[in-house]
Amino acid sequence: MQTAIQQETLKKKREKIVRRGDSWHLYLMILPAIALTLLFVYVPMGGIVMAFQEYKPYLGITGSKWVGLDQFEFLFEYPDSSQVIWNTLRIAVLKLFFGTIATLTFALLINEVRKKWIRNSVQTFVFLPHFLSWVVLGGIFIELLDPKHGLVNQLLGVLGMESIFFLGDNNWFLATVVGTEVWKEFGYGSIIFLAALAGINPALYEAAQLDGANKWKQIWHITLPALVPTIVVCLTLSLSQVLNAGFDQIFNLYNPLVYAKGDIIDTFVYRIGLIGGNYSFGTAIGLFKSVVGLILIVGGYRLAYKVAGYKIF
Image (cartoon, rainbow, N blue to C red; front, side):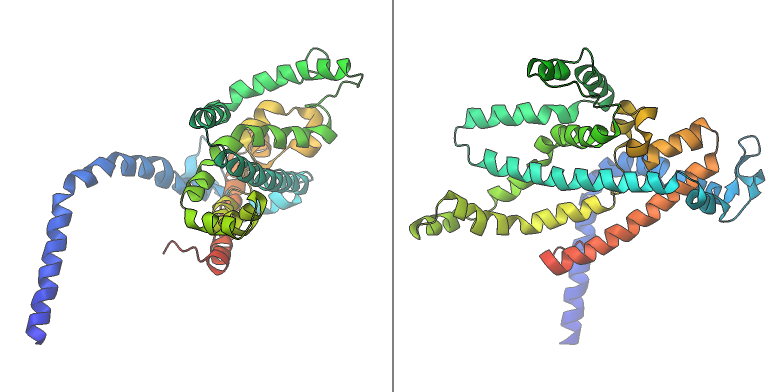
């Protein structure tokens, strides 16, 4: 009996090896992606050691002075550090909150459109901004929001309102950054919610209609509960990026007038670390962000597993 079981186990192992051998061309296809990942993601991680050094380019990593945790102490003692970290968290959380609401709302609305040509046209129109670089969009918004000649302020003047310096007023810059980011990404971000909506059993809606439920009640009692796992997963995956408030966008829109509300960790590192030549400081902040992101993603993963039963491994 035991011999038969062992033979069956060996047979399954041989079949598994044969299947893997037949798929060699598939493994070959992913080799370029693996090579690029190793070259541009894992090999540069050796530079983390600069965070614990007073790095000098002419001395290199091996010749630079070891300073331990001095760079991290400098990070938390620097006068502007706390404001920069707070700006980063505030902008990232607001983008995540309003972005999730916008993408979910759009997905629910577009899902109710029955004419295919209208649905496809609207989706194409709102997806397009996602594929535009912030270098391009930054120039467009700078012109549109110009306090003297911008189209937006000209319209405000027609309505009898005073012009607003959207990109130069700390009170308006935050709303401008969050609003433009949501506008750019809500269409593309709704794809995952549309996919989740397509997987809801139509029989649930038919049963609800027989019970007299209108469209709003169907959304509230069927659609939204069905989307809860997807929402939790999206929020969980976004937690690791909570310290990335969008360097491309901020860098192309901000200026010294709005540093108090618009300066984030990445732009701060760019000015102090790269422009100022303090490479060790920039590396220390990058390592700090990575550690915080790891903690958040692990915590979010645990929360997602408890709330939505989401599990990767």
